[in-house]
Length: 200
Image 1: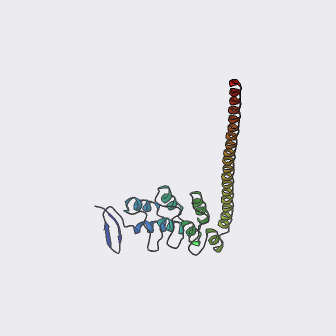
Image 2: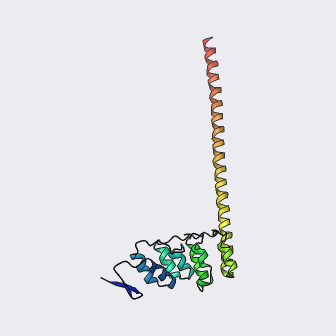
Image 3: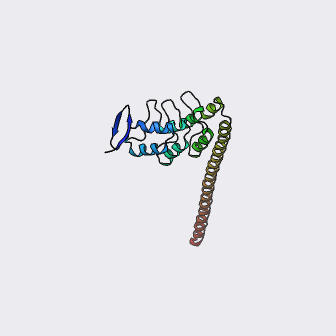
């Protein structure tokens, strides 16, 4: 039987550390400890008393190695929201995450973080970066938003072109059927007239 840790002189005995350990590990940047608690925890996707996930906590303190562990291992959703609408991206854009704020922002964006999500108070990541005076993060978010809008416009134009192409093809097919019907009718009339002449 193993003793994993002690708190207030009370030993925690057994194979499963308390779920709170993963939050302590994420806050302190202890990757190995976090890895152990995630593997042993019965509910790795729990939240703390504030409704924050372990990824929220790792992002808040700028611990990239812990963030990588959580996302690469499938232990966290990059866009997970707390009860107030804060995502890990919001948590990253604070003074507490220095000196890894910008690197963490890039990492989260590369792993699918939504750039335009708002908190319940209407605060977007761009708003927060500007309010915190994070110039490099603000510039990155403005640039990325432009890229997102460009990709969206391109996708919309492609859909519109495809729809027009399908409509045009359907119209051409309909016109072709009309021509064939007219030709068929004319041919039938000619045969009937020839038959009448033969009868006479």
